[in-house]
Length: 143
Image (cartoon, rainbow, N blue to C red; front, side, top):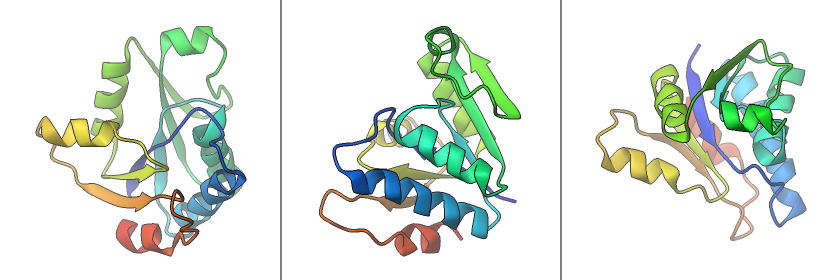
């Protein structure tokens, strides 16, 4: 089983289609037997993605800073929720746990990681900003 890190937002996004895309991405990950590694929150797009993967029987690993756990945004129902001390440590742990990366809905933090020499490559991109509702591109890139 490959572990795919997906970076997405803690808000639901400005378009309702974003939440639908998170559910479709979950279906794609689970159908390909890929585990999700993500930011550990129960809110926004990342929360929807994690809940959907879990509901479909997929493996979900969350990594979240203690400060966000204290603000009660952690997805505490996860079987594997790792609590770290900083956002930087969060990114590093996610990178260590993952076999590849996906990026959802306009996240730019991954580019920063790549510039710092992280050995992983982007596994897929999902952007609905131009009306692209096709999650097949992500599925093809993650296989």
